[in-house]
Image (tube, rainbow, N blue to C red; front, side, top):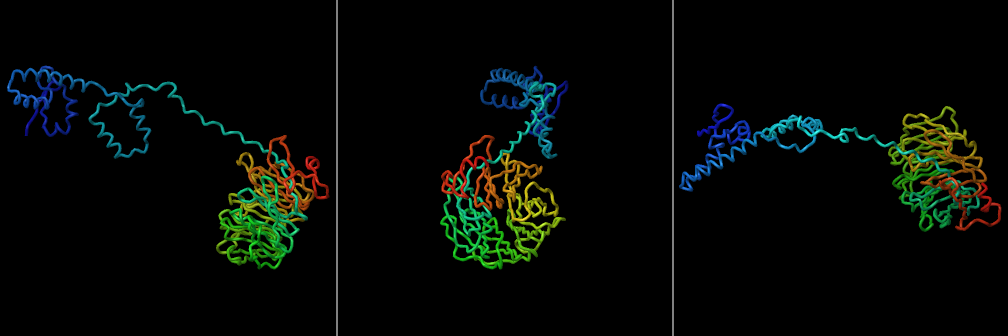
Length: 481
């Protein structure tokens, strides 16, 4: 096997050619070429041999070879003493600490890759500037919550001849539906305050309404013991009513997908309906007194019902099984009930002038809101948001002609709003709008505004109200209220 000889650090070392090819860079770094030798590397020796064979002139070849050998030796010496420039301003330890999840195999690979390179002198690393050494800036303080903007009356919608039992915004926010003891339903344009449809088919007063998720279908429950579906686009009823209850229908609600409907009645029953087939899917033995309210949770898997027996029951939609029964120690009749928008809580209105927020999983009352009056009528309310949607409020009608708004968390009364002449029975909220209905037959729309905002009062025909009559409200009177 051929052997190459070289001078290094006071003594000669013999290196096999195979080792030289495999570890050439490492051994080349360890050898210090002598200035007096003519060949500083194996490659130089081989090149000189090949050049001799080609030129045929040994003297000229040796002269050129000496020149090349000097250059090669000078280049080899520079390679040994020159340190590579670091591409990073951090030391190796810094780079390794920045990769705490580096595995042992990765560390071995890094060692192999650096084997042919000159080690970096940490003392020679470029120091960090003062600006780079300073700590990361602190996170900015969270923005201050936007204060509650009080609601001001925007519109008064008139047309019902008797008291208004319920009012609802459509899911798309374009329409308001109101139902009345005059056996009619009216659909109003939210923007213009104009009545676009009057729905007539029930034979008695209507106590409850619910919008389908498509904002094109409306359901109503009446004292004539029937439930009807309506097209909100044409104002026409569906041909087949939902029949099955034996007494007044007090409350209805659509499932989130719109394929099911739940109803509660004075006959103490809760029915689950197939909307497409207009048939009863399941009858729930719910209460021992009239059912005042029903609702679906946001994903449709649960139903809540309440009754005059003071009970709140949570049902499994798929099986009809009662999962939880909630009762307060006072056992006051429960007039209405609603799931919170996030589906975690239940808000219940009771005839002891209280609104209670329940954790239905634990069966524990979390908050009690007071300040309104409710001992006789079946009053309901709603959830809403303020402070740019970052905080929530609960709203409830009252028998003294006002309705109240409480902060859900702190129970602080945010606003008492007056305007109706008589009991306020129904409320609904959407974004910065509130709608209310009461026994005075009016539907009123309220908007959250800054202090000093202008108030606009319009009638059911979209014009300012200036007509005379017991149920007409003049602009001046409305402003004073």
